[in-house]
Image (tube, rainbow, N blue to C red; front, side, top):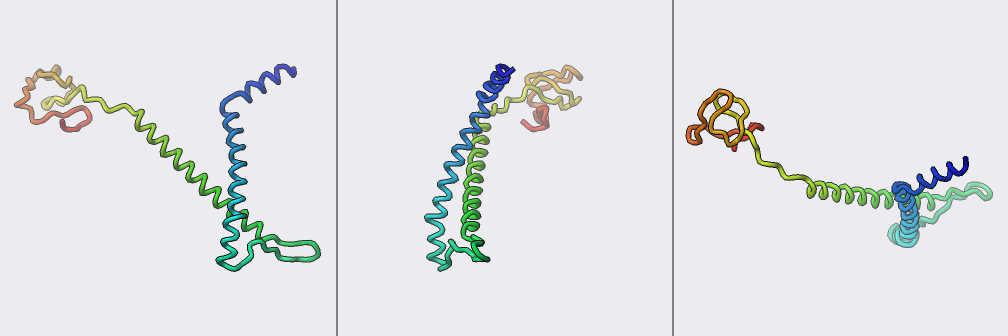
Length: 153
């Protein structure tokens, strides 16, 4: 029973999606500490210098109870920075995906059929006589060539 369970677990954990998720969580945690350091060591001192307010502030309630609004503001700033970075990453990935999609897109092929100007049936592009109405299709007598999409050629 446990042997089968561990075999299934091993198969699950070795899938690419689980490993990618694990790497993403680890990198996200490391990036979060960088953003927290940026907020605490760069942004807070700048706010303190510019505004003259202490962002490390606490409001004393009663006894040992405090409202730590400085920590809350730091968390809000951290969230805004993380949301902005994630937005930029998603935008860059979407742009990269659209560029690779354009590169791998097949070019449009030339039309292989046209419409007979007399009976409006679809015929091969190089036909000189319509197989449906038997009209002669001379290049100089045709009003214009039209492909199956209705575009003029």
